[in-house]
Image (cartoon, rainbow, N blue to C red; front, side, top):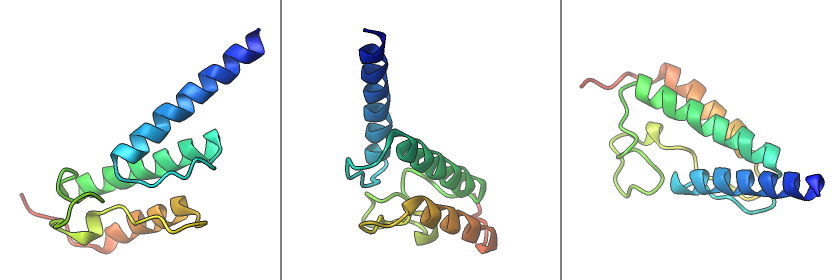
Length: 103
């Protein structure tokens, strides 16, 4: 019985992470492992922290926005069968070379 409960908890946690990613506009295929989902969410959260540190507005500069203030502050779109975490991390690193926004 404990194994079934652990599987249910793991599935519930994966569903929660999936929902958090999708709410940010990040495509989730359903083929990701729970570990992949957590890694992806961590990459997104690091990217968002870098955007905020550079003065970006996460409410405007997101994947759902038709007119972001600065395209550098938008999470990169996911390409099928791509390791999107690496792409997000590369975009976050590139923010270091991007001028900070003024308030």
